[in-house]
Image 1 (cartoon, one colour):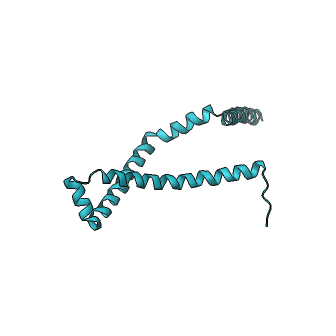
Image 2 (spheres, rainbow, N blue to C red; image 1 turned 135 degrees about the vertical axis):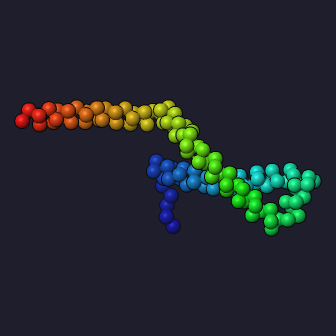
Image 3 (cartoon, rainbow, N blue to C red; image 1 turned 60 degrees about the vertical axis):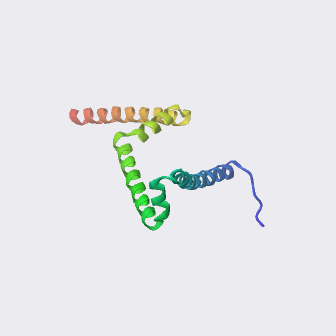
Length: 124
């Protein structure tokens, strides 16, 4: 039997596994919320139609769900909400902020080197 060692790398790996599992659990929660939402229609004419004709209603609802999800995802991509959210989150993260500053410094130094090379080339 392999001994379990608790070190930083193991803890990080375990956290990644938990985060991945949480994503899939989120899908299940979303489906459960959908079922609860449909249950709220019981007793209404549309609810009666859904539950009396599951073979017709489930594919239609699944198609509508996928269609609406694609539309929302498309709009989110076009309007850039997710990118702005990630940009704000990364600017508040000190490690990512330091990486961004280092990258900006490297780019400015690269521009200076290019300008210097260009001026040397023109001198010859």
